[in-house]
Amino acid sequence: MSLRNLSARASPVLSFAKAARMAALLPLVAATLTITNAAPAAAQRKAVARENPGMGNAIAEFYRSRGGAPLWFSPTAGPAPHQLLQLLSTAHADNLNPNRYRVAQLSRAVQAASRRHPAAVQRAEVMLSEAFVTYVRDLKRDPNVGIIYVDPELKPTPPSPRTILDQAASSGSVSRYMERMGWMSPVYVQLRRAHAARQYRNEHERQLLAVNIERARALPSGSHRYAIVNPAAQRLYMYEDGQVVDMMRVIAGKPSPQIAQTPMMSAFIRFVVLNPYWNAPADITAQRLAPNVLKQGPSYLKAKGYQVMSDWTDNARVVSPASVDWRAVVAGRVPIRLRQNPGPANSMGQMKFMFPNEQGIWLHDTPSKELLDEAARLASNGCVRLADAPRFARWLFGRPIKAQGARPEQKVPLPVPVPVYITYLTAVPSGSSIVYFDDVYGLDRRDRRLASR
Image (cartoon, rainbow, N blue to C red):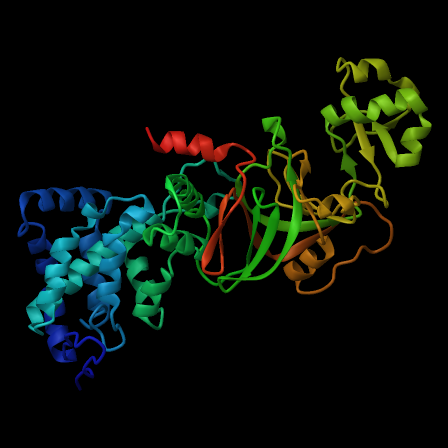
């Protein structure tokens, strides 16, 4: 039984019998390729081999597992070889050097394969797979832009060569997989396309695309569910199957001081807390709450639902406001813990979404809905306030979530934790164009300086 002829580009096709015979030669071919090129190319290949140990064996095993059937020149591959060549030749858009992927040699190998000689096809197959594995592993790395990985498994890690090839082979259409860059986030892909097509008006926008591409490198690919929070746009996006299915406005951290900025982090939302307490940060207590106690007396605390706690532990007890030197609190000499009970005035609103982290950052409801109507919504102390927390909970759980009575701190675990990626994107895809946001935290200026070193 032989493979059907390709029609789109008259790409060469091996019969199953020939392909199977050639599979046995793959280790030899892979080894031969490392010594048959010019010296500079050979040096590049040796460097790549050091960075990707075992790649030659993994590629050979991949083809053996397929009975020698081609990936790039299969009946359904279509223009996949040329699409990969296009990606590699424009790798500058990924902030990578195209020379690393030996595009000229690859192009000649693909051209030679068009003559349908089995050895030429096999050589091009191996070279394309080798270049593809190297390229994907270069892309799937931590961009090192200051992201806090609360859950280490969300940190970008280069996949194994076999995983990369298996995912491409199982995609259903290698050509469509190449077109979509299915191994990367759709946000990354759209920013990259704009950069590669020079879809920018000036050098400033080009640099903005470059720094935002690095941040988007840490966003996920695939069809699973996840949320992205972008403090620069002050929005939250809900993703399913690589598409935005819902979005809402948020209030993010203040631009200054730096400790109030919402940090970039990746974590799993693991549970929601209904009827939450709010523990006022020490600086807010000193600057905003304690002065009101001095003016209005302890009645202010009762009216707003605050309690003075003995300490910051889980076993803290309620103490009398009369035992506190409120002038010393205002002066910053005596830090105290004020806890606000659940209720209409509670700063957490009805619920908070928890991904436990040392920075004390979470997503939560808010009673101050009027702030969400502002064009600039940078007013929190680092946490993210949601325009419609119940709607977000309904998306997470697939059903409405409501408290059972008035009991404080009702914890509802998520059956399957959902990743949230808090990232800082000042260049955001919108349809076929790119929308730019103000550099409210000054990270563009920082990252552009680093990139120019």
